[in-house]
Amino acid sequence: MANIFLFSCFVYLILFFANDVEAVNEDIGIYELKMGDFSVKLTNYGATVISVILPDKNGKLDDIVLGFDSVDDYKNDTTYFGAIVGRVANRIGRAQFTLDGTDYKLVPNDGRNMLHGGLKGFSEVIWGVGSHDDNHVTFTYNSFDGEEGFPGDVAVSVTYMLVKTNKLAVKMRAMPLNKRTPVNLALHAYWNLGGHSSGDILSHTIQLLASEITPVDEELIPTGEIVAVKDTPYDFHKPREIGSMFTQLPDGYDINYVLDNVNSGHLKKVAVVQEGVSGRKLELWTNQPGVQFYTSNMLDNVKGKGGFVYAKYAGICLETQGFPDAVNHPRFPSQIVNPGDIYENIMIYRFTAH
Image (cartoon, rainbow, N blue to C red):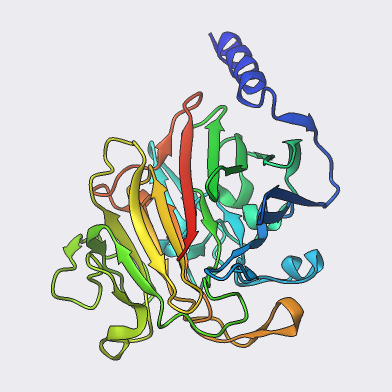
């Protein structure tokens, strides 16, 4: 039976990456997707989004994601600019969990906790490059048993694709090969719709279609509660400026929102962000149960593209995901994936300007 299972996994891997893999190597490259005035640049180092360029309401082109000029700068990055993070995105309390009676000790990299996959998570590795053309590129990675303490081998891919009417689709997939293991991937892009060098995002308006959050302790680890946002500074069910209630917060937003009506697994609109001067609007769809809303509170004068210095609140992250520390909270949706099953995180961004 074991041999039959391993053979079936091998066959599935061929199908999993069929028509996507042309070559896998250790070279770091830059890949551009382009559709009219809409273009995206990516690198297979961390499967990272380097730039997203599109016009404002007057036709002026701007890059609306924070980042660096050189791929080498991403190798020394501690902000996770534009990267795919995993095997488990966000935080795992005390860098440990128990699965099927086995205690797993992970690699802590955020005090005593694990953040975004550990010291060398998916954002810090060179991904293989699959098929690519002007409209799409696929990156692949084989995560090994014991990597950063996680059990089992996992085949991972992420596809970026441009779709008509200024849409960017991102599909993250993973399949465990031989052990049950947690999987929770996320895209850690920092957005500023006024342009990456336009200053802070406090005047952006945002709507989050989420009625609850998972509150955290002083180490940003979820307490296990799920609480309503109504009549709190976390309530964005109706659009309002990001900075409108900052005086009631300790230091901006860095919290997981429990999204409304996504338990079916189908795509649903979960966020709308607008910037007044440029007229740009971002709409986000996902199949995930949560989204981390982060206002770059920890950015500390990071030198970015063109020498521009990114200060606190220079961008916003909207990371669709499973709930943080779900491996230690049975009430949260499970992130455990069985061998042969497929984990899939889909994000679709639609950009307009009026």
